[in-house]
Structures are given as structure tokens and as C-alpha cells.
Length: 137
Length: 406
Ligand SMILES: Cc1ncc(COP(=O)(O)O)c(C=O)c1O
Image 1 (cartoon, rainbow over the protein chains, first blue to last red):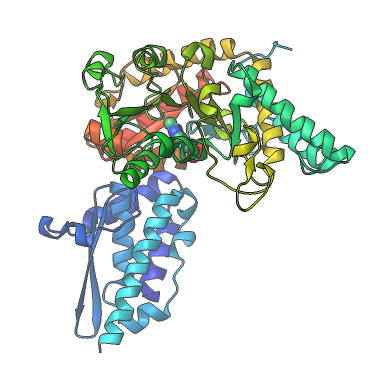
Image 2 (image 1 turned 135 degrees about the vertical axis):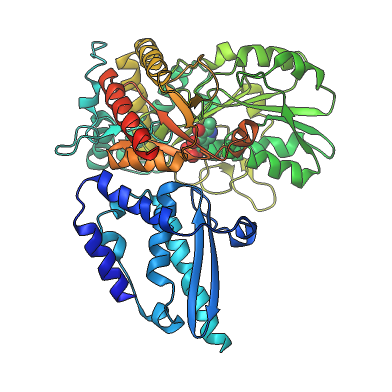
């Protein structure tokens, strides 16, 4: 996770204008595989975001994997970034690590409160899932 | 006095003219900025004349009471109410609506009765009525609409019957800036003795509100949407109805004789203002209203008409852009979507360019459902906005759309 975070921060550090930053964020979203329509259901929908965000969590061989999607381009990019950060980590890693990638890539200011909340809601959901996996073991 | 140059009023609002970063504030339907006179009036009250009101027998208290009660007079005059007693101070439009639902609605709505509400109300003007209906076993029924989102008065007459006990409409839409013909609507119900409640939250920043002329029985708005402080609101209640209302908030200063067995309520409006009110806020609100009158409501309306026409013309040049509610706006409030683009992407990138707008369902899920959309971008102007800000906004919007369509 830390390694992926460093990589993302470094990718953004070369970009200065909003166009470049968002272009990168959006293309990250476009590269992420789309969530199958059968998974875009109420149960996987996050409440509290301005655009729709779906997230599915899978636990396999001690690691957590996340699959997500959104109906808005920028949100999809943010979702992809979160998936990149957390997918493939162990529950313990997720619980122990506090990331502040968004403030370091110079986007947080401009992500409207609603979306920041959405981001927090998504990270909360990931954390809750990690805790649940540990408890179930 | 009365000599403000509307192209330059932004300078009177410190938050708009803050140094370094230029910002275009197009989120006025959410809340308006405050002019220095309002900020100063609040500071002056705390600095030079602060006291509680309506209770202490000392000079400071008398003077504070006088300022508070003078504010009531200023508001009365602003909306042309007959009596100051018809003006109840609240914390905002939301509290005004809840007050009427509880203090009046509960007394007149009974099982199987009907409350007619337009289906395109702000949540604040929908949920309290739904709650009231639920508690009383009554029903909330939709008022039919025309294509342009105005109330279809002719069809409305057809859904009328004896069970209708209250009618609830907005004056100016928070999504489209379109105005309802309150006078005509009131005309229909008045003969039948059915009271009409008007949510005027968006109106006083843009148009002259004259409750005598509208002839409605209830009218409310929020101070913060009319250049006044947050936490201030107004509820106008026609005198004959004030008497039919019972207080829903109990506390200090609302009784003339406190006895646990049979308390005697103070006369209205104090009966509805239990507890220490937002004194400084109300003083600030009256400064805001005086400021509007100094600038000139009629001048504001004319100037905003120019802003509206110009914005509509510019927006119409962007293909794939759908504006909701048509061209006949009473205020420069524009909600739109662009085909194939998500509204939240547009507002995020506008904000990235220091143009502040709002997107989402705009607390009006009813209207979103009616339009069959899940949200939109809302651009809402006030009289301190300028034509060249519209130019800049359009340039940036076009840039954003070509960026998102790449
Ligand atoms: C039409 C309308 N009604 C009611 C409200 C609620 O106002 P407040 O939140 O100030 O109480 C608003 C605010 O957005 C509004 O636009």
C-alpha cells in the first residue's frame, strides 16, 4: 500500500495544471475494468455521494480485493485510485495504514465536500470490511 | 442613497472581493454573501448595545429590545404586511415551515383530510407536510403542473374537494428560478376558505414580495438567502390565522402567566418565539433588508433580468445543453445537464477554475423525479454578479465540456 501510494504521488507530482491532473485521474478510471451491471445494485451502492459509487469487496487467500465503479468520470478516477491503493492488501495492512494521498496530489481542495465525503465513505467501507475479515478468522 | 452602481456592488461584499484569488460566486440560491453593512451591524450590536431582550428592566435591555422590534417593523414594511404582529421571527425557512405544520397544521388537518402540495417543492417544504399527514392519517396530494413547471390552476380546480384543508406551494423555484402565480392560486382557494402557505425562500433576494398583494395566508423565507445572517428566518401569518395557531415551542418569554395547570400565552408574535432568539442575527437581517431597499429592489429586478437574458442566450449556444424549466425566469437561477456528461464532473471542474456552483439533486428530489433526472448543475446569480462573469463562466464551461468529451 505504501509503495503504491508513493507511486501515485510521484505520478501526480509531474502534473501541474488542473487539466493534466484530471486527465490522469480520469484515465486511471478508464483503465479500471468496469463493474458488471449485475453488480451495480442497491446493495453495493454507497450512500452519501453525489454521483453513484458501487463497491464490491472479495477476500481471497488472506488478501482483500476491491472492484468498484461510478457513473461520473472524475469520481470513477477517484474510485480507481482508491482501488489501486487498497486492492491486494491484507486486512491488517488496511487497518494499520493511514493514507493521505489525496492531499499530497493537490486535488483535495477542489474535490467538493460531497465527493470528499464520498471518498471517506468508501474508505470507511473498506476499513469495515477489513475489520470484518479479521474478526471472521 | 439609492445611487448604487449595480456593476460595482460586489465591492460592498468583503468575501467577494478578498484579495488574491479571483472567484466567481454562482451559488446564490444556496446562500448569498453578506455586505459590510450587515457584518458591521452585528459587530455594533455586540460592541455597543448588547443585552437580552423583552425581559431586563435596564437601559441596555430596552435599547436591545427596541432594535429587535424595529427590525420587525423593517421586515413588515419590506413585505408589505399590515401589522408587525404578523411577522414571526424564526431560524430560517425550514423552521418557519415546521412551525406552521405543527402550530397550525395540527389544528386543522384531521384523518382522511388532504394537504395539496406541489410535487416539486424543496425537501424543507415537503417533509414537514408528509410528517403531518402521517401523524394525522391525512394525505399529501400533488398539485398538477404545466409543462413550464408552473402550477396548472385549471387542473388544480378539478382536484379540489371538501377534504382539502391546506395548500402548499413555493413562490420562486430553487431549481429553475420560475415563479408561481400566487395571486391566481390564492384566488381559487380563498373563496373556499382554504388557507395557502407559500415558501418564499428564494424570492426576497430577487423580486419585490408584497404579501398584501399576493393575499396568501402564510409566507416564509430565510435571512441568509437575502444577504442576511444565517440562523434567521421570517414567517408571515395573516392576522386571522395567527389566532388559530398554538405554540409548538415552549419556553421563556412566551407566556404572560406561567402556571403548570393553565399557562397563559403571550400575544403573538412572542407566543411563537420562545427562548432567547437570534437577536444579533435579526438585527443583521434588518440591515440586509435596508441594504436591499437602498440598492433598490426594482433596480435589482431589472438588472437581474439583463443577467438572465444574457445567460440564457449564452447557454443556448452550447449544443447538448438542456436547461430545465424554460425561459420565463423571475430570477437568474439556471439548472442544466449536458448530454453525455455527469453533472458532478462539471461542477468539480468549475470549482477547480474558481467558479462556484452546485450540482446534485438540489434538495428537490421531487423535481428531479418529475424531470426524470438524478441531478443537474445549478448556476445561481445575485445582483452583485456581472455580465463579464457570465462571459468567463461560458468560456470555462466550454473548455470543460471539450475536456470531458475528449
Ligand atoms: C425553496 C426553498 N425552500 C426552503 C429552503 C430551506 O431554507 P433553509 O435551509 O434556509 O431553512 C430552501 C433552501 O435551499 C429553498 O430553496
